[in-house]
Image (cartoon, rainbow, N blue to C red; front, side, top):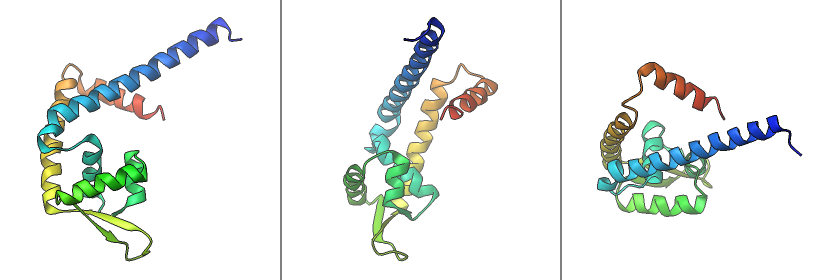
Length: 145
């Protein structure tokens, strides 16, 4: 049985966790609606474009891990992005068992436009916070996991 102090601490921990999860989901939905919908991208598709824009080529298992999706989900996502000419898949030169993903010029263009729109959404969401408050919040959240 938990003591009153342990129950209070557990309740606060659960409240913070739930609040973070709700906030993340709400922000993701807002970004998909206001920044990504026009380009036809989902949050996961945007993550793939972001990752391949900063480190290309990227092996599919790395993308799945970084984006938090299963390999099966990633396969369908990559097929869609490839049909839209936003990425290319090819066999790894170093290890033929692996597939690497590279962003295309069109993918980079779409990613860049989406990133600008996301920046606007982020700025609107956090407009009431000062730069110092934002740095503190970012440090606090980053230190959680």
